[in-house]
Length: 345
Image (tube, rainbow, N blue to C red; front, side, top):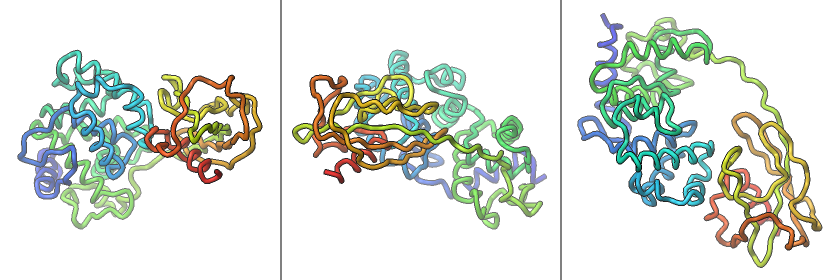
């Protein structure tokens, strides 16, 4: 029957053999398996981020740290700066922690269970690395795979409650061999054919067994729970300039944007507004508003500029040359504030 698991895998793999996307971190069908370091690095970067956004970062990371041992030996500040702009900065801290454990072990564990024991490696990343880099049969479910499976099996339970059923269905169609190619094929199918809007069912290799297509409503799935309104937080960032340099601080290792260089601020956080207190006495003036959206809240950040400040009472930090501010690796919200401050000079 056309909807038997083996047939679905055969249809998908046949399509992938001729349509696999060429990506910097990928080996094409028939080529030797990819270096687990590159698979792991790309999968961490791709979480909550697009392929187009990740590609240049991946290249720069490999140039700076071509092996997991090189990454493990890197300075935290250098890695955080190189990560700036990719967002979800806890990933960068976990990346370093994981690299250092792998370097101590001497290599990446070759099993899904062993990979899951590494710092910052969850179920998805462990399954992806196990399947793609080591050829282990593992069930890999990202957002693209989730969408394909939901439509293929007409799972109409709203997300996230549908995820156990989606995983069970994905497991049923994952083959014993070529699980890595199957996972990447499902990802590619979701990214290029079984898209969120206007899925291209006429060219889909899984059109025949797809229950959502048979029902005439593939775009309706997956069903998503109504989004909750995000709270609006307000805070201040302080631009302290001296001799064509600006004061940057390093944020605490834990918490929002942890371990990254940033402008001094007034303590705003995901659950609270800032306290409005400047880092030092001075003649402060408003320099405009920066707006930024985080996963769980929106932020309005008031930029404060100083005409004169008590330099003897500043927070610990470093004065960074304005001409080289891009190299500081500021998180996006503070990079926006820096651009606004420079426009106000």
